[in-house]
Image (cartoon, rainbow, N blue to C red; front, side, top):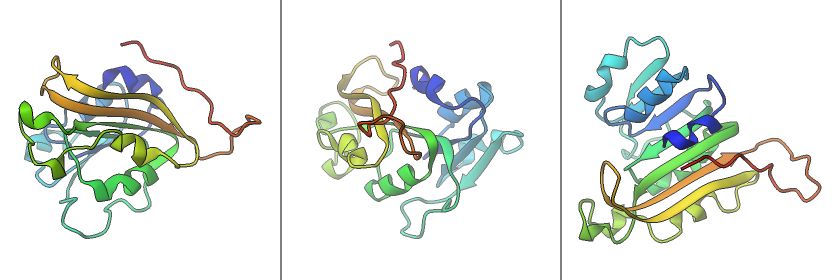
Amino acid sequence: MARFAPLVRPGGGVLDVACGGGRHARMFLERGHSATLIDRDVGAVLDLAGHPLAEVMEFDLEQGSTWPLPDRTFAAVVVVNYLHRPLFPYLIQALADGGVLIYDTFARGNERFNRPRNPDHLLKAGELLDAVRGVVGVHVVAYEHGIAVDASCPGVKQRICAVISRTPTPRPDGEPEPQPLQPR
Protein backbone atom coordinates (compact mmCIF):
# COMPACT_ATOMS: atom_id res chain seq x y z
CA MET A 1 0.00 0.00 0.00
CA ALA A 2 2.61 2.52 1.07
CA ARG A 3 4.67 1.87 -2.04
CA PHE A 4 1.90 3.40 -4.20
CA ALA A 5 1.32 6.45 -1.99
CA PRO A 6 3.83 8.55 -4.00
CA LEU A 7 1.56 8.19 -7.06
CA VAL A 8 -1.21 10.10 -5.28
CA ARG A 9 -1.23 13.83 -6.01
CA PRO A 10 0.31 15.67 -3.02
CA GLY A 11 -2.44 16.88 -0.71
CA GLY A 12 -5.14 15.18 -2.80
CA GLY A 13 -8.14 13.67 -1.09
CA VAL A 14 -8.21 9.94 -0.41
CA LEU A 15 -11.30 7.77 -0.05
CA ASP A 16 -10.79 4.78 2.27
CA VAL A 17 -13.64 2.36 1.50
CA ALA A 18 -14.70 -0.09 4.24
CA CYS A 19 -12.03 1.60 6.31
CA GLY A 20 -12.18 -0.62 9.40
CA GLY A 21 -9.66 0.86 11.83
CA GLY A 22 -8.55 3.45 9.27
CA ARG A 23 -4.98 2.15 8.88
CA HIS A 24 -4.67 3.38 5.30
CA ALA A 25 -6.42 6.70 5.82
CA ARG A 26 -4.15 7.36 8.80
CA MET A 27 -1.09 6.77 6.63
CA PHE A 28 -2.37 9.27 4.05
CA LEU A 29 -3.31 11.78 6.75
CA GLU A 30 0.28 11.60 8.05
CA ARG A 31 1.42 12.39 4.50
CA GLY A 32 -0.73 15.56 4.43
CA HIS A 33 -3.70 14.24 2.44
CA SER A 34 -7.30 14.74 3.39
CA ALA A 35 -9.15 11.47 3.92
CA THR A 36 -12.76 10.37 3.74
CA LEU A 37 -13.31 7.18 5.70
CA ILE A 38 -16.46 5.22 5.01
CA ASP A 39 -17.72 2.07 6.73
CA ARG A 40 -20.95 0.65 8.12
CA ASP A 41 -19.40 0.77 11.60
CA VAL A 42 -17.08 3.71 12.24
CA GLY A 43 -16.49 3.03 15.91
CA ALA A 44 -12.82 2.23 15.32
CA VAL A 45 -12.16 5.61 13.63
CA LEU A 46 -14.18 7.98 15.79
CA ASP A 47 -10.90 9.39 17.12
CA LEU A 48 -10.43 10.91 13.65
CA ALA A 49 -13.81 12.69 13.66
CA GLY A 50 -12.17 15.87 14.97
CA HIS A 51 -9.15 15.72 12.68
CA PRO A 52 -9.17 18.77 10.36
CA LEU A 53 -8.35 16.66 7.28
CA ALA A 54 -10.58 13.67 8.04
CA GLU A 55 -14.23 13.05 7.26
CA VAL A 56 -15.83 9.99 8.85
CA MET A 57 -18.96 8.62 7.16
CA GLU A 58 -21.07 5.83 8.59
CA PHE A 59 -22.78 4.14 5.65
CA ASP A 60 -23.60 0.55 4.73
CA LEU A 61 -22.29 0.21 1.18
CA GLU A 62 -24.17 -3.06 0.71
CA GLN A 63 -27.62 -1.84 1.70
CA GLY A 64 -28.67 -1.39 -1.91
CA SER A 65 -29.23 2.34 -1.93
CA THR A 66 -27.35 4.77 -4.09
CA TRP A 67 -23.64 5.57 -3.90
CA PRO A 68 -23.24 8.08 -1.03
CA LEU A 69 -20.68 10.30 -2.81
CA PRO A 70 -22.17 10.83 -6.29
CA ASP A 71 -20.58 14.19 -7.09
CA ARG A 72 -17.22 13.77 -5.36
CA THR A 73 -13.90 12.71 -6.79
CA PHE A 74 -10.67 11.78 -5.07
CA ALA A 75 -6.97 11.66 -5.83
CA ALA A 76 -7.03 8.05 -4.60
CA VAL A 77 -9.54 5.36 -3.76
CA VAL A 78 -8.25 2.68 -1.41
CA VAL A 79 -10.01 -0.63 -0.77
CA VAL A 80 -8.36 -3.35 1.35
CA ASN A 81 -9.81 -6.69 2.48
CA TYR A 82 -13.30 -5.84 1.24
CA LEU A 83 -15.28 -6.94 -1.78
CA HIS A 84 -18.69 -5.81 -2.99
CA ARG A 85 -18.63 -6.12 -6.76
CA PRO A 86 -21.49 -3.66 -7.48
CA LEU A 87 -19.19 -0.88 -6.20
CA PHE A 88 -16.55 -1.29 -8.94
CA PRO A 89 -18.07 1.31 -11.33
CA TYR A 90 -18.60 3.82 -8.51
CA LEU A 91 -15.03 3.45 -7.27
CA ILE A 92 -13.65 4.16 -10.73
CA GLN A 93 -16.07 7.05 -11.22
CA ALA A 94 -14.91 8.52 -7.89
CA LEU A 95 -11.36 8.95 -9.22
CA ALA A 96 -10.36 12.44 -10.28
CA ASP A 97 -8.15 12.99 -13.30
CA GLY A 98 -4.85 11.33 -12.42
CA GLY A 99 -6.54 9.46 -9.57
CA VAL A 100 -5.07 6.24 -8.22
CA LEU A 101 -7.08 3.11 -7.50
CA ILE A 102 -5.42 0.88 -4.92
CA TYR A 103 -7.39 -2.32 -4.37
CA ASP A 104 -6.16 -5.31 -2.34
CA THR A 105 -8.44 -8.14 -1.25
CA PHE A 106 -8.87 -11.89 -1.04
CA ALA A 107 -9.08 -14.23 -4.00
CA ARG A 108 -10.13 -17.80 -4.71
CA GLY A 109 -7.88 -20.24 -2.88
CA ASN A 110 -8.03 -18.21 0.31
CA GLU A 111 -10.41 -20.76 1.78
CA ARG A 112 -7.34 -22.94 2.50
CA PHE A 113 -5.88 -20.23 4.75
CA ASN A 114 -8.47 -18.15 6.48
CA ARG A 115 -11.73 -16.32 6.10
CA PRO A 116 -13.41 -15.37 3.87
CA ARG A 117 -14.06 -18.83 2.46
CA ASN A 118 -17.27 -18.21 0.53
CA PRO A 119 -16.39 -18.04 -3.20
CA ASP A 120 -18.89 -15.18 -3.59
CA HIS A 121 -16.58 -13.10 -1.36
CA LEU A 122 -13.37 -14.06 -3.18
CA LEU A 123 -12.08 -12.58 -6.42
CA LYS A 124 -11.74 -14.81 -9.46
CA ALA A 125 -8.42 -14.86 -11.30
CA GLY A 126 -7.91 -11.54 -13.09
CA GLU A 127 -11.13 -10.02 -11.74
CA LEU A 128 -9.53 -6.73 -10.67
CA LEU A 129 -7.93 -6.43 -14.10
CA ASP A 130 -11.32 -7.04 -15.67
CA ALA A 131 -12.84 -4.31 -13.47
CA VAL A 132 -10.57 -1.68 -15.06
CA ARG A 133 -10.28 -3.21 -18.54
CA GLY A 134 -11.93 -0.98 -21.09
CA VAL A 135 -11.94 2.09 -18.86
CA VAL A 136 -10.69 4.95 -21.02
CA GLY A 137 -7.38 6.32 -19.79
CA VAL A 138 -6.59 3.53 -17.34
CA HIS A 139 -2.95 2.67 -16.77
CA VAL A 140 -2.33 -0.41 -14.65
CA VAL A 141 0.84 0.26 -12.69
CA ALA A 142 0.88 -3.03 -10.80
CA TYR A 143 -1.15 -6.21 -10.54
CA GLU A 144 -0.50 -9.20 -8.31
CA HIS A 145 -2.31 -12.41 -7.56
CA GLY A 146 -0.93 -15.04 -5.24
CA ILE A 147 -0.25 -16.17 -1.72
CA ALA A 148 0.62 -13.31 0.61
CA VAL A 149 2.48 -14.88 3.50
CA ASP A 150 4.15 -11.73 4.81
CA ALA A 151 0.95 -9.69 4.98
CA SER A 152 -0.79 -8.60 8.15
CA CYS A 153 -3.64 -10.88 7.04
CA PRO A 154 -2.07 -13.83 5.14
CA GLY A 155 -3.95 -15.64 2.42
CA VAL A 156 -4.54 -15.58 -1.31
CA LYS A 157 -4.69 -11.95 -2.38
CA GLN A 158 -5.30 -10.00 -5.55
CA ARG A 159 -3.96 -6.45 -5.78
CA ILE A 160 -4.09 -3.71 -8.35
CA CYS A 161 -2.81 -0.17 -8.59
CA ALA A 162 -4.15 1.78 -11.54
CA VAL A 163 -4.02 5.45 -12.51
CA ILE A 164 -6.94 6.98 -14.38
CA SER A 165 -6.34 9.82 -16.83
CA ARG A 166 -9.57 11.62 -17.66
CA THR A 167 -7.92 14.07 -20.07
CA PRO A 168 -6.97 13.14 -23.62
CA THR A 169 -3.46 11.84 -23.88
CA PRO A 170 -0.91 13.74 -25.93
CA ARG A 171 0.47 10.43 -27.18
CA PRO A 172 -0.24 9.75 -30.86
CA ASP A 173 -1.10 6.12 -30.08
CA GLY A 174 -3.80 7.15 -27.57
CA GLU A 175 -2.16 5.24 -24.73
CA PRO A 176 -2.12 6.82 -21.27
CA GLU A 177 1.16 8.25 -20.04
CA PRO A 178 3.27 5.72 -18.16
CA GLN A 179 3.56 6.14 -14.39
CA PRO A 180 6.75 5.67 -12.39
CA LEU A 181 7.22 2.18 -10.98
CA GLN A 182 7.45 2.11 -7.22
CA PRO A 183 10.19 0.14 -5.48
CA ARG A 184 9.09 -2.98 -3.64
